[in-house]
Image 1: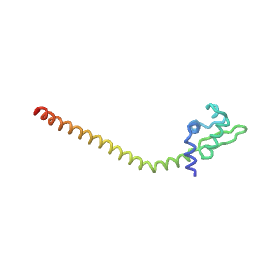
Image 2 (image 1 turned 90 degrees about the horizontal axis):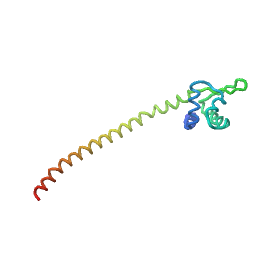
Image 3 (image 1 turned 60 degrees about the horizontal axis):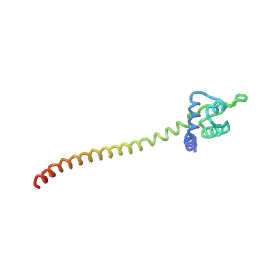
Length: 128
């Protein structure tokens, strides 16, 4: 379930921007919100999604709510993707071999047809 929440959280560009900001330093919710053209309430909803995925932690310091990045859940998502990398890498390599092989075969076939057609065409033209 954590993996689903992480992918859901990072699927939104606003939330990815919040994570980027927090990767540089901890920030108050109001400071994070000031960088977006949306209401504080809307940014708070994004922050709650990030908290639900475990990507952001909130500490209360007096009246300030300070957000911090917790990248550990992203490591789990990265490990999951890395496991499947070999599958898509192999498939892309096979596709590349197929396309470049077909292109090379197609070029050789087209070249031999052109070469074969030229003398026959010339011979036919000469006999007429």
